[in-house]
Figure (cartoon, each protein chain N blue to C red):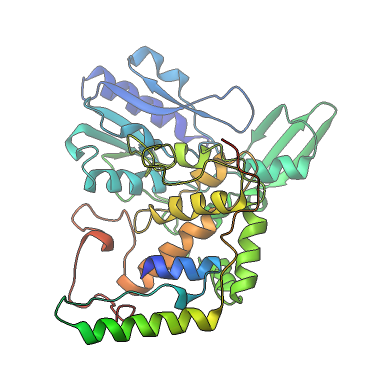
Amino acid sequence: MLFQNLMDYMGVERSRLHFSWISSSEATKFVDVVKEVTAAVKALGPNRNFAKTMAKVA
Amino acid sequence: MLSYINNIREISERILKEGLVDMVIGFQQGTVPMMNEPCIIKHAGDVNRLVWDSNCGINLASYLTNRKEKIGVIAKGCDARNIIVHITENKITRDQLYIIGVPCKGMIDRHKISLLFAKEITEVVENDGDIIAKGPGAEKIFARPDVMQPNCVVCIHRNPVVYDELAAEPVEEQKDVDRYEDVRRIEAMAPAEKWKFFEDLLALCIRCYACRNVCPLCYCPTCFVDNSSPQWLGKSQDPVDVRTFHFLRAFHCAGRCTDCGACERACPVGINMRLLTKKLEKDCLEKFGWTPGLSVEQRRPLDTYRPDDPDDFIK
């Protein structure tokens, strides 16, 4: 939670980072969460902020 | 604050003579103005090297990590809290320490004075109310409250929370301080604005790692930024790498940072990286009711579990 808040504070949208606890027997929950995560991230669009712009050295 | 030094020297001399400690860690006059340096005194005859004024902003808890000797240490409010953090993280034991508590009225901000003076400063003198900076052919008097370190302005723990002996009477704690005004202002921004804000804040960073080196919390034998296998973090000056460094450095201080301001003070380009650690401090206080470094009995939120821990972030 502290991590998510700090990400949000730095300008990474909250819904780009998800936390979930899923047991190996909870297949449907897994599917639901994955759908939810992809939908949330798709809605935000690509995050290009983390693309490096400087030339690579070494 | 200047008058403390006699007591500090007297106590240091006594505990060294009596053999209570093997060394005393304090401050000596630095080679440039406003930069007192930490020093280790091992002989009672050397205690006159110790100084105390408003330039003792470095956190002396940094010098206690993994020490085996018995140590006398001079501790302001923030140093004392970091000593407690050290004790709870098993980096030193309380029995090894003789803490000489120094009630603190705030340290002066060397960046601010340099900025306001705008010329080379060769000498800085202080009396009770004023700070007088002198340079070649120039002199300027500053009122103390105007040039205090930003973290000292919002400090609410000026008196050491733990000590064996106090070098002076406790000072009055600041009341009604709004510690998080700047954090709230950033929180209210839109994501793109936040990103831009930190882009500008960190633009000057030269990755010298002074903020890490001076921090009492940063004692890992190999820091994540130095590790090359695996390499956690790019070594370049790319804004993404710089930002990732600051982000992770701050996160490693979650629930441990006492806002002593050593990082900001040490920064050669004057970046206020405390904005990051203060956000974590604010969250720890609001979500876990936690203030670091107040008691050796309590564990910090990130290494304890309580049934009422907030868990609405997890689905």
